[in-house]
Length: 160
Image: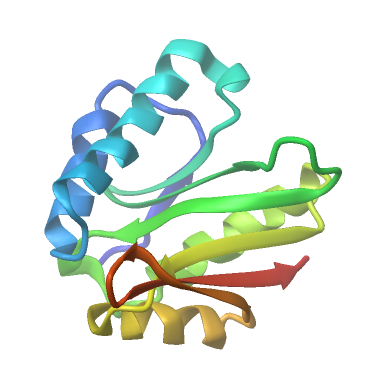
């Protein structure tokens, strides 16, 4: 993998790029992938008023990873990290950590003090949970059977 270039501007081509990244992971249900794509579409149609902010990692013309985050309504300084994903063939090379670090810096520059992340407790998400812990996120709560029977929601937090 060459050194990626990072950008915040959302482009129309990002709709399919995000779909491709999320599908490549094998982690997400079709409905989840559709939500990830809808956030890009909403950002394209509404701009900054959508409340969604992105950082994309590109290698040449190819988007290989991204994050999506936004301020949590009715809070003074809390943000959600809605998505962080790296194309399956670009994983385990530090790109996720770089995207997360850039997102944390952007959130802090926007006045953010806390970042919340949620993920599944299913076994296939073990590496995801380990990733957040290695990046100094702490488990704040576990909501039993949130996504479905035996599929708990794990909520992480990090102060920035």
